[in-house]
Each structure stands twice: as C-alpha cells, then as structure tokens.
Image (cartoon, rainbow, N blue to C red; front, top):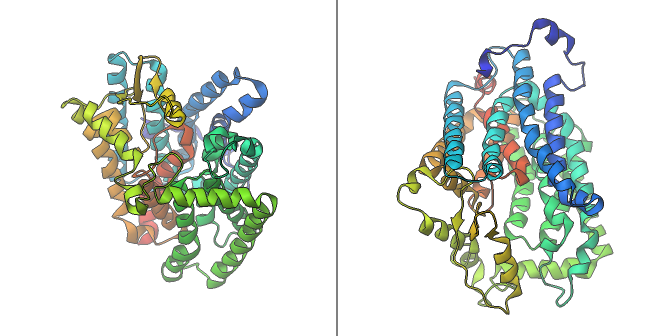
Length: 468
C-alpha cells in the first residue's frame, strides 16, 4: 500500500532539502531516533524527575513508531525507479509483516496483555520500516549527518550514568555491580558507534575521532560491567573497522585511498589510548579489578558462577546460563507451539530452585516473576535468535533467517561500495550476536535500526545497479 502513496509535487518541491541539510524524511527519522534515545535513558531521567516519567517515556517510545511510515513516504517521493527494495526483499518484507501481525492477533486472542503484545510486535515494525528506508540512498546521506551527534550524546549520557558506580563495592573490589548503575540501563544508546566507524573512511577525521572515543568508552564500559559477549563484540568491531574493512576497500572500492586507512588508524589509536589512559589515571584500581573479574568470568570462576574454572569453551557452551534458559523454553512448549509459537505477549515458565542464602539468585528470580500472569517466567531470552521462535514459532523464525540468507549470499555485490560493505559486515555481526545476546526488544532499538537499514541497503535496487 505504501508503494502507491505519493506526496503531491507541490509538497515535494516545497520540502526539497538544501545542500547539507536534512531532508524531510531525514528529519522524521531524527525525530524517531531522538524519541527512542529518550526511551532508552528513561531510568536516568527518572532518577531526576521521578517515576512518573516512566509512562511518558513508554508512550514516546512506542508512539514514535508511527513516524516511520511517513519517513518512508517522504523518501520514496524523492526516489527514482532504480531505488528501493528489490523483488525478493519486498516479498520477505510482506511475509514478515503478515506473520508478525498474525502472531500479534494470536497473542491477543490468548488473552495476553495488550501492552506486552505491543512491546513484542513493535521491533518487527521497526526492522521492516528501516529495511525500506535503508534501500534509499538519500537515507544514508541523512543518517550519516546525525550519527556523530547521537554517538556523542550516548557517550555523555553513559558517562553521567557512572556517577554511582563505586557505591556498589561493599565486599569485594572484583564483584560485579553493573546492574546497580544507571549506565547499565543506558548502554544501548551506544549501539550506533560501529556504524559511524565503518562509514567514516574518507569523510574527515572528526567523525573518526568520535567513533574512536566511543569505541574506547564502550570497551571500558563492558569491562567495568564484566560483560563477556559485549567486550568481545567491541574488540571484533574495532578489528573489522581498522583491519578488515581497509583490506576490502583496497581491492574493491574505486574511491579507496590507502592514506585514508593509515590516517584513521593513527587517529583511532591516539584517541583510544588517551581515553583508556584517562580512565586508568582516574580510577586505576577499579578498572584493573573489574578487568580481572571479567577474566575470571571467561574462565568460569566468576563470583556467582560455580568455582570450577571450567575454561572459556565450557563457559560459552555447557556452563552458559543462556542455554539453560533456552532449554526451559523448549521444555515448556507444546508440540503445536513449535510451529506457531506463543504469540506476541507470550511467555514461558521457568523452574525455580532457590537457596535462601543466595541473594544473587534471589534478585534474578524476583526479576523473573511475571506479576500479570502470576508465574515465574520469561518473555524474552538472552539468545535473541530464539525470540521469533518464542513469539511466532518455527514459521516466523525460518522467515527471518531466510531474509538474512538473502543478504549474506550477496557478498560480492555488496562489496562494490563502502556503505554496502559496511552494511553487509554489520548485518553479519548483528546476527552472530543474536546467537549469544539478546534481541528483538525496544530497549535495544538501535540494533533493530542497524538490522533493518543494513538489510535494505544490501537488497536495494541501487546496490545491484552500482555493482554492475
């Protein structure tokens, strides 16, 4: 239906952007991203303005999704026939839209709470909307203009969120106090820094410096939070941005200059070393102790892990609590639900075995009690790739995976230009992250933006034409 909508030509000419300014579609996307930024920092704002802001933030977060169809409309009004999603991507988009809508209606028919169903449904709408936006070349021009400001704001907000970090150390300097800090609740605002890093080649040293500072901050943050997957992901993003991407550019991009890569590495290394040195100068013992705590968690010797020293491989597989939760999901499903899922708003019950002396487990169990249905359970998983399965069964999960396969098989086509290469790599990494990390939640909406926009770019008509 969106394909048939056109803004009148008088409106189009009136809102034609000036050189260097955002288009009307770009301004609409900026409003959406700003609203989501406010939603992701709600706990920080609530610490100043009180709990009443929570309802306001929720309304802003989910209400702003309604802006996305207008953004699509504005961009399509400026697009040529060689822009937009190609046929296979359009078919995928329609399939996901249909299946997620069916899961939403199915969830409501089972009596699930409307608010919970909307929370589960919204991520699919965001991915689909940004798939259409990412297929428009003009979107990427606008997106790159606002990226540095979002990344800088994210670093500032997360820095402010660390103000109560040291208050959590009461017994052991290596104990994990991440969840007690406001910065833990705002860390998802930093999710766009890899996009800025991957797109910054040849576009000036300022955006590269911002990306470098954000990367150093993100790595330090993940160490202080003792997050295993997060720390590894940040290092992988840095390695790809500084090593793999230049190698691809040297052999595949017509506009590539080797001097760009050398300059970016120098700037990145300098800014990163300054940021890390500053942290060590301010709180050396805290940084070193938390780094040791992170190493212990990798080796299975964390404070709340079994003191088995099981090693890295077992910690990521056999002794991984994420897989324990996944097993409980499969155990709670009926045979038909393997096919159709529980619907949007659906949950699964978990087995609770608690020792009264284990306060860490008590906190975890308390967070897993679903008050609206009166059971201990989960509406989400840390293994994000299972979220479509939970809500829409193997049908929705297979449909999502099919779409990612459409992108990953087009590597040669996508490597023809910088933006498409960055998108292919980002989409690959985001989907690998879903094997060990969470996903399909609005509290990490910037990752949904990356998945959708990169999908659209890789499967756009313009990318196909440019590669020919």
